[in-house]
Amino acid sequence: MVCGSSLHYLHIAENLLCTYCGAKEHGHVKCEAGHFVCGTCHGKDVMAVIEEISMTTRSKNPVEIAEIMMNHPGLPMLGCEHAFIAAGALMAALRNSPYGAGKITSAEIHEVFHRTKKQAISGYCGLTGVCGIAPALGACISLFLGSRCGSDSEQKITMEAVIRVSQAIADLTGPSCCKAYVRNALRAAVVVLGERFGILLPVRETPIVCSHAAKHPHGCREVKCPFYQKPARDIFADSIHLPVAACQS
Image (cartoon, rainbow, N blue to C red; front, side):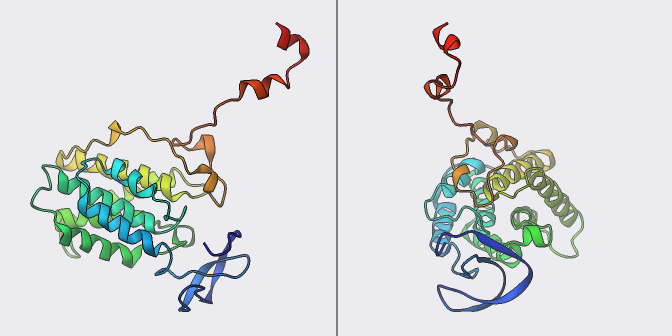
C-alpha cells in the first residue's frame, strides 16, 4: 500500500510504527522496505463505502452485494475489510428479504460490524487458523437468532454455522485469498440459513468470474480456484510455435 514491495509476514510480532498515522502497534505484517500500515489506516476510505452499500442496497443476493463491494478500486487485494464485506452483504440481503423485513435495521448492521471488529485481525487466518470472515458471518447469524453467551439452541446453531463457514474457507486456502473466502463463506452461510430456517437467498443466480487474479501478492491459485477464469487462448501466438507442416494442414 505504501511502496508496492512484497509483504513480509512475521512469525513473532514486532512493535511497528504506522507509516500513515504514526501509531505504534504490535504487528505481524510489514513490507520488505519496513513500511507498516495499522489496522485503522488499512482500507480506511473503503470502509465507508462498505457501510454505505450495506445500508442502501436493495439486492437480496449477498454474493452480488459482496462483488460490488470487492470491485471498489480502493479495496486492498487482501485484508480484514473482507470480513466486513461478508457481514454487510449478508445482513443487507437478509434485511431486503421477507425474512428480515422490519427485524434488521441499520442499528443491527452497525452491531454486526462492531462484533466483527473485535475478531477480524489482519494476518490471523495464518497465525491462529481463524479467518475474520468466519466470526463476521457468525455475528450475523447470532444477531438474527438473538444468541448470546448462556443461550441454548441459538448459541449451538451459531457455532455450528461458523464451523461450516470455516470449512468453506479452508477448502479454498493455499495460499489464502480473501475474495475467494468471501464468496465461498457466503454460500455456506446461505445454505445454513436455508437448512435451519427455510430462508432462501438467491446466491446461485450469480455466476462468479474473478477479475483480481493478477493482483494477488502471494500468487493466485488459478485453476485450483473455482472462481478463476483462464485467460483466453491466443490462437495466432500458439500457431507460430507449431511445426510448419501443422500450420499448412
